[in-house]
Image (cartoon, rainbow, N blue to C red; front, side, top):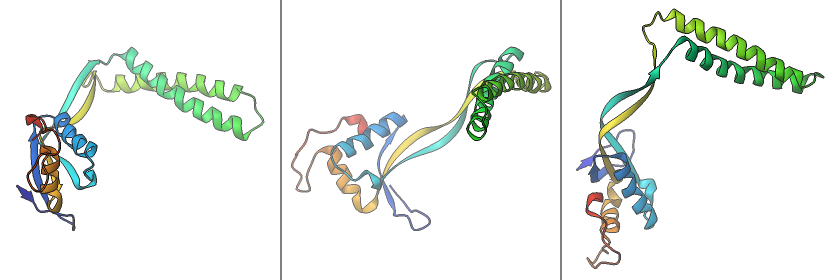
Length: 167
């Protein structure tokens, strides 16, 4: 299967289709290990799905703690700026840290309270594909297949064959 590309990119040819990204990645790694120019290879995911993994309940306390952590980082960064540009002592950093903790915790709790319980869980979002296809620029596709199967242009084997699940 070949696919035409838009915007002047080269046409690509399918050399393998896999159920997992790790399997497709393993094929590209094999090509790289055997010296194939992998800048001519693409892993294309198809039939994309948004997957949101719920990791826990988001309580008022957790929201306040998350806000405090964010506020602390911001406070430390602001404190470092004041420490560098002014004749203050290290107390600028400590003051920034404490102020950031307090304001961050307060606003984290307020933000959670304003949701009214509509989203009281924490989650991680990601995109997953149903299939992963390894595509190679058309002029190089035959060479990539030879590298994976371990054959030369004349058909003789010069390397051990790749595992069946990689092709």
